[in-house]
Image 1 (tube, one colour):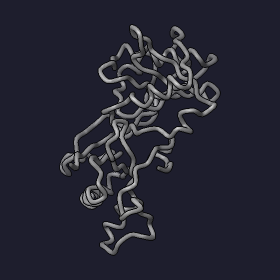
Image 2 (cartoon, one colour):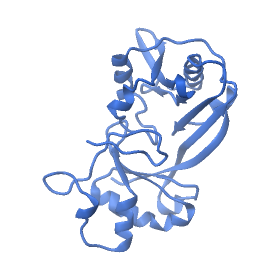
Image 3 (tube, helix red, strand yellow):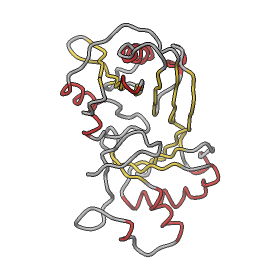
Image 4 (cartoon, rainbow, N blue to C red):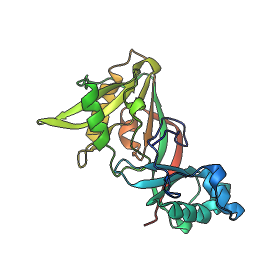
Length: 238
């Protein structure tokens, strides 16, 4: 495993590398001969494990680069990815992709008020993160160093005898991550409660929230505005 950044540069990933012989790794200098399109595809793709453990390939394209998609899909399939995730503002349905909730950056000033939620100990937060976000576009298995960063505080949404989900905040940076839920536990009310609970850790003022694969509605309901968004697309490869 090694760490790289997502296309939006927000946090490190636990990376799955496509197999290339016994070592199970491949570097740019080891690329086999092939077309320029294939080499371009190899340069653009990031490989990782989804939150559910599936190997995925991911990239960001401008609308003018949609013509690269056949080569990208071919290369991702060759490398063993089960899904291809693309950040792109163009309509990719002609290329066999399904539209998903993509990436959004949302801003609120002031941060929405809400009731405080329990702060999770590191072990509980790490356990919940390993099971949250399964099936949600754009979410990968997180890097352990990112999970345990000293800048982060996690709040949990209780349910009877356990937890429904959690939300990560970085109070010093006035930043909150979109909340994650255990399978079957995500609701709009739960999203609003966790975001408000994370914002309760901040001093009065603005807050930034980044989300992947998450509808905007619950955030807009509590006073956020969309500052940036890139549509998400998925193609199942096998």
